[in-house]
Image (spheres, protein in one colour):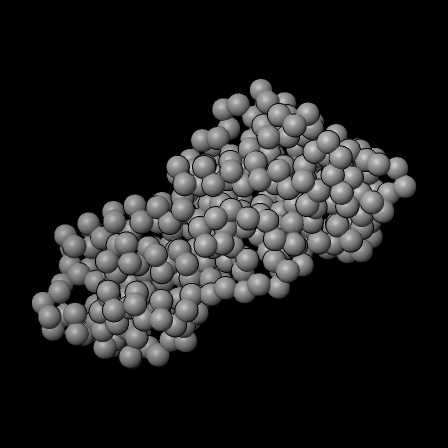
Length: 339
Ligand code: F6P
């Protein structure tokens, strides 16, 4: 691959090809800030003379050629909107070799020189398949769970945490007034980032994370008793949905601590809503970076944040990277609770 006059040229092609048109899609669970990323991609592309086509409902839209041309005007007024106006979907058909082939054929028919995929790890694995089928791709990390190995930051995480924090604060007010024990379940099936930061920010007495194995007496009952002995009369437990033993937690607390807890599930409220400043700006800059990559000839990349800087990593390398809440980070968080 090389660059001629700032445009990407694929050396393996017999004819030189400049980037004229790209597709952009959102895939997997939506996240606040995805619209800002779509806007960032569209604006940066337009500035470089590249036209952008929105692909509706993720890979499903590529399979069924559901395209929406996007002009600069079309993305005006979307930066503050939650969700994704292109809509998103999970596509079982795209997960098959035939599906990938069909999607690649449709991308070629639509004359897409590259596809920008906004989503999580699963969406990036789909992007890798698409690139193997001949369609250059760029991935932008978008998920409220912040659970993508190659990047310190994913679009939507900041908004989701702030939404969770606000909701937990409200629950804590009423828990205080009634001297209750409140369990608040936040999202995070496999990763506890939302629970971890929300628990710290809300001064929770106990945090329960998927990264931890639960010893009920040690991790729940003993700290609750210690807090009560120290004079506390209301108790707050923040749990990630993927934490151990949540189904039996309320009844066990009632049995062994003598208090019937309230149980609130924040659920999808955390996935919607207007994105925060951080999500809007990071999504916009990541969208811009996706186009800068293509202009430089850097195809098949994932845009990531590493050491606080936006960068672009080769997709295979990015997908092999792992991250998780470290034991020391978890310990530090618990040192601020009663655990
Ligand atoms: O977006 C991430 C996430 O919210 C996870 O925390 C959760 O487990 C999952 O998506 C649920 O998404 P859905 O119900 O759309 O499958």
